[in-house]
Each structure stands twice: as C-alpha cells, then as structure tokens.
Length: 433
Image (cartoon, rainbow, N blue to C red):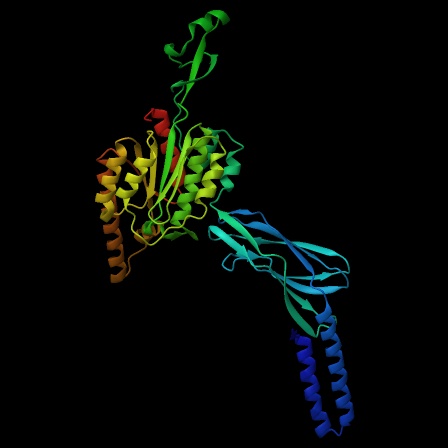
C-alpha cells in the first residue's frame, strides 16, 4: 500500500504550516491538532482500504489468436459490496502493442463493469497472460494499493488465418483471384469428369456427348476439371535464412502465412496437403485431404521458429524422399544464396527422381530499397555496389536451378502467396502431376 498524491500534498502543506508557528505566533496546539486529525483520517482510510475485498476480475479472450491482427480483449470487474474506484491493467505479454490500457473504473455496490481494449499479437507460439493488476483507491483518495486478480491464461498465437475465413465465402477460383493470382482459364480441359452442359461456342468436338445430344435433341458437351486427390507438400526452411524481418514480421512468418493460403486453396481443390519443416525446428505432417486438414496444419506449425543454423538441404531432401513415397508437388520456400547452390542442387535432383519441385526464393525488400536510394557519398556507392553484386550472385544461383528444369520463384514477402497459388494452379492446369 502506498500514499496517494493527495496524502503527500496534505503532508507537505501540514509541514509548511509549521513555519506559521515559528514566525507568526500561531499556537502550536492548532498545528499539532491538524496533524493529529490528518493522521487519524489517513489511518481510517488505510484501514478501510486494507479490509476491502478484491473485486472479481474475468478476462474473455479466444484461445487462438492470429499473428499481427488486432483483437478485442474484454475485461469484466465485479464488486461484492461498497462503492469502489480502481485502475485496471491487464498483464498481457509485454511486447504486444495494446490500446485502451490502463482503464479507470468506478464500481457501484454489488455491480459489474465491462470494457474492452485492443491487443495485437506480435509473436507466434504459446503466450501467457499473467493476471489482471488492480490499483484500488481508498474512499478519501489518501491511499492506493496494487492487487492481483483474475486467473493466468495461456493462448496460442497462430499464423494469420484471418484470410482463410474470408476465402470460405468464395469458390476456389474466386479465392485465388483474391490472393492476387493471375489465372489462365482453358475451357473443357482436365482429366476428371465434372458435369454435362449445353454446348458453347469454342468447345471441341471431343467434348460433345452424342448420346446425350440425341436424347435432348441439342448439342450437349462434357465438362472436365483438373484431377483431384493429388499431393502437395509445403517444404519450409526454418534455418537462418528466414530470420530476416520485414514489416514487423520475420520472413518466416510471411512464409507460414503464404503456406496456409496455398494449402487452403489446394484442399478446396480436392488435393491432399502436407507440411515438412526443416533446418531449425523440424516438423512433419503427412498429406491429408479434407478441409479439416487446415486445422491440423495450423496446430502443427503455429509454434515453429527459425533458428540461427545452416539448413542441410540434402539431408532434408533425403528425409522427405523416405517419408513421402507418392509423387507430389514439393514447394520449397527458402532464401537461395550462391553459397548454398551445390547443396541445394543435389537436394533438388534427389527430389526430382519422384516429385515435381518448385523453389520459392524469398527476396528481401531492403535490397531493392537500397538500390533505389540516391548515392551521395563513397559509403553509399560501396553499399550500392555490394547490393548489386549480391543480387547478381543470387540471380546466378536461380539460373543454375532453372538449368535443371526447376521452377524458381524470386518474389518478395508481399507477393509470395499469389506466386505460390498461381504456380500451384499452373501445375494443376498443365497436368504435370
């Protein structure tokens, strides 16, 4: 329990009034009586606050939160008896930005008060809310006391799954366009029968069903769709290449968000999706079908973190080849450097014996910004030259992969979801799997 500013002010004023006793012939008894009265008031106020029960505090927050998305957290305070004035601060994870805290409330007797504040998770994984801190004020505002209320609570911060809830309202093709993927439609192609419909200008003669045409006495075409029940494996680098940060998020967080988007759309297409994380933290989820698989992927990857270790691409490719026997589209998301190219080429060649491989190389936005900066001095020229040299070596590494018939995507974090979705749909459309 601590004295409030009002009590400190009164004590200072009482102490200064002692100069009146010294210099203005004011009776000392009056000064002493004022001090005794102040002491009695402070003691009574202190005893009241000490005996005051702690209000009941309840936090309402979802057990799962998306990374980087603001959410409302609701706090409910209940007072058993007596009027109470207090300040409320929720002990959320300290590095999460928040708005609306602390809050000052006045609780009436046997009443409850509810308010919300905004909170934005900034790190994935398990997070702990330690409790709710209350600062109670005494009736005369002479004392303040800090108390803990409410229970500690654990929440899980997942990759940003907010776009997935929006995609659920649209078809797979419409959702793909929302991501930004540029789709090339080719009517009537595919290997799986979809439906019968009336003939349209542009349909090939091979699509016409002559028996159905004879029965209905009008041209009827067969419409096919891309083959379903194919396999997609998202192979994610969790090594040191993913530690770079951009727009308050690590590259690895952008990779997880993009992987969720392409996985969700692949599941909507009827394919099976798996996850293989390698480098730092390791994780394996065998390909699964059905929209429930997205929950499995979320739970499996929410606590993955990149580590400051070099990724052994060849060892990862060997492990994946042993785990995934069926031919699949393997999308490896990493950041290709020229010093990694020999190991990466060996890994890709091994995977290509059974799988179709696509390498997405995440490009740092800071590099492009460095080249756009105006050079004004020698240090700036050296920096621009070093960046240009690095990008040249990076391009050479990509060309080395392309020379072995590997699809390489050189994209920034903002364009990664659209690029992955577009490439996945292109492989489906071309029937390469």
